[in-house]
Length: 464
Image (cartoon, rainbow, N blue to C red):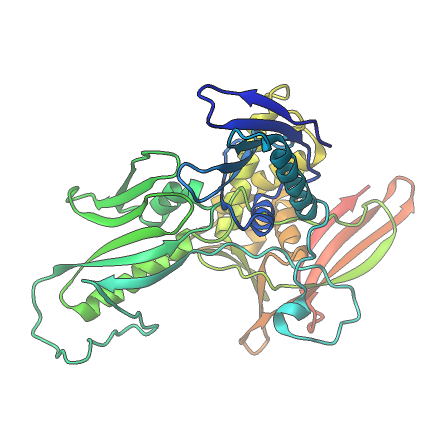
């Protein structure tokens, strides 16, 4: 649906604005931004998502000031996008605006109404013979932050995966000396939807540092963490002058020599990449609908566990299996549920906040909070663990564990009778329901390895 273009004259008159409204079928900001960049390669595009669920996408020509600007703004979802086209005040501006609008509509239709199918298991791991039971389509992958181009005093350094980092060629090990500061500079690329939550993520990952930020403009970012005992010493700094683009990362490490500094640097970079990766409230997986309850059913689905859990993770320890869950995913589900709970209290301000999809997302958030509360630190980074029996004692909470397994959003490690642990890349999900009379029946869902008949989890599905 579109409305005719209207012209808004603003003094001074070097720019004419053409405004219209577009109502899309869907609003995935990452897909939209990718399609718009492909449709308008001559424009420089960037995007931002708001905590209220709104989206702002903008593309401008490279001249200063830009002669062409295309802006799409959606304040809250679901809702129409306001399309604003800015052009120089020429006689052909109206025709040019109509042509740009047609290109935008074509790009959005491609992105929203006909999304490309997700990559299949065979696309990722090569052609494999299809199994007998149906496969569940893989989920979108969690986002990742990448740190590269690391330099020390202007020269590039390489981090080894080993714990001991050799000294550069030509240098010999010296006598132990007093620790000194080594300042490393690097480039850090952070997914756009992770950027709004950078500070709380960094605070969780580095609780010993005091974190501050200074927002000069909406596209300029400056975040730094200082040592609490010496506030003037900046340990980690994250700076970006203009959006979009990578961040400049600065890390100061105190060590006796360069080899020890490189070892500490790798640990810090691993913590940074783990903190700024995974899932966010703007990038959540899709949950499939289970078969209807209350009917006679005996159905087995095979699910490929292809989505990496990453670190930090939550380990649910059972008698014959360990289920690994993504901590960032559970935290994102929890935060998303809290936002929906607050919106549900103001239905007039947030229409659609009480629909079925929002209700299910709110329950997933409550279940995620219960798992996070039950889990305890393992002493390994930010990993947590809990006993599977305690987490699944409540069927309300156990339902989320089952959903994550059914949607391929967990990893499973089976414990063999000989004591060895074996990763399980594929599981069977068995939906069983028996209805003896209109108001008499029961149903359960069981989970087992595709190559192992022994189930490692069973949930009560429904009972009447």
